Image 1 (tube, rainbow, N blue to C red):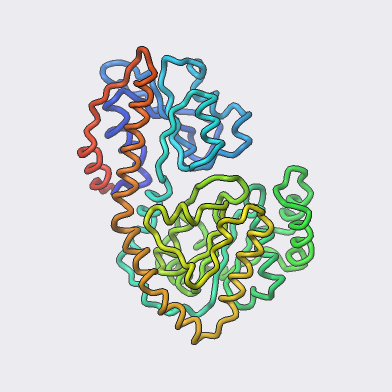
Image 2 (cartoon, one colour):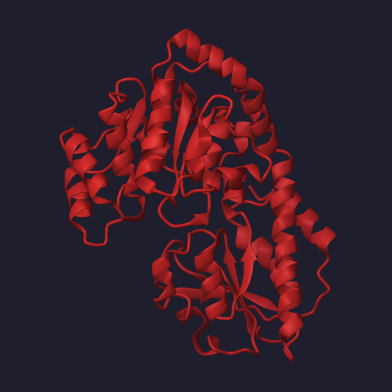
Length: 390
C-alpha cells in the first residue's frame, strides 16, 4: 500500500505525469506560505496544467472563499479558461463547490486521511482486539481553540456531569488560551457555550493530561504499544474531529484510532459525518448508543446530546462494560477487518475514478488544450494498491 511519505510522488508518477499534469503544493506541508511544484518535463515539455494539493490534507474553511490562497498558487493562469486546474480535496461541501466554480477548478475528491490511517496504523492489523476495557470512555483534546473550540465546551460538559473521574479525559489548553478564545470576537462559541466553559472548565487545573509519560499518544502520527494500550484501556472513544462547526463531510485519521483498537465511538464532528463514514462500509453503534446527534444542526445541542451518551456509558458497572464490549464484538471485528481489507480497494478505486472524471469533464468543455485520455485504470490501481515504500 502507498505510504504517506511518498503519496504525492506515487500519484504524480502513475496518474498526473502520464496525462501531462504537474503537482503544485505548499511547502512545508501544513503551511500556506511557500509554494512549490514538481515542474518535471511532461511529454517533452513543461506542463501547463496543474493539480493543487494541500486541501486534501486540510479542510477548506469558509474564510478561504475570500483569501488569496487559491488564487496565488495558480498565478497568472488563475483566470485562464484554456488551462486545466484541478483541486485535490478530501471533503464534500458547498464551500468546495463554490470555490471550484468561482476559480474554474476541477473537483478531485479522495479520502486522503484513509490512506494516512492505513500507513500510520498499519501494524495494528497484526494486533488482536481481545482486551477487555477497564475504563468506560476516553476523550482526547490537543488543539482546543478556533475551529476546535468546541472541545472546550465538550470537556466542560463532561466535567459538569462529573465524568472526569470515570474516564480518560485530556485537555491541553491553558487558562490563557481559553480566555483568549472566549474574548475573541470571531469565536465559534455561543453565549451559552461561553457560560458553560466559564462555569465548569476555567475553575479546573489546566492543562489536563491522562498520563504525562503517554501524552504523546494524542499526536496523530504516533502509534505503538503505549498508544494502542491507551486506546484499548477505554471502551467508548469520544472522537474529537477537526471539523465541527462548518457544514461538510470531512474526516481525518482520528476516527480510525478506535477502529484499529477495536472500540466503539461517538463522533464529535459536523452533522452527517457518521453517515459519511458508514457510506464507506463501516458499522456504527446505534444498537447501544443514540446516534441521532449526527442529525442535529445546533452545535450546542449536539454537544449536549453526545455528552449524555457518554454519561450513560460512564455510569455502567465493570460487569456491564464487559457485557457491552462482548455484545459489540462482531461489529468491532467487522470494522477492523474492513479497514485493512476492502476499504483499501474502495478508496483507491474512488481516487482513480474521480481523477478520470476530472479529465473527462475538462475535455468535454475545453475547445483546445485537451488532456490525453489513455490512463490505464487497472495498472494505476495495481501500482497504488501494491507499492510498498515503508
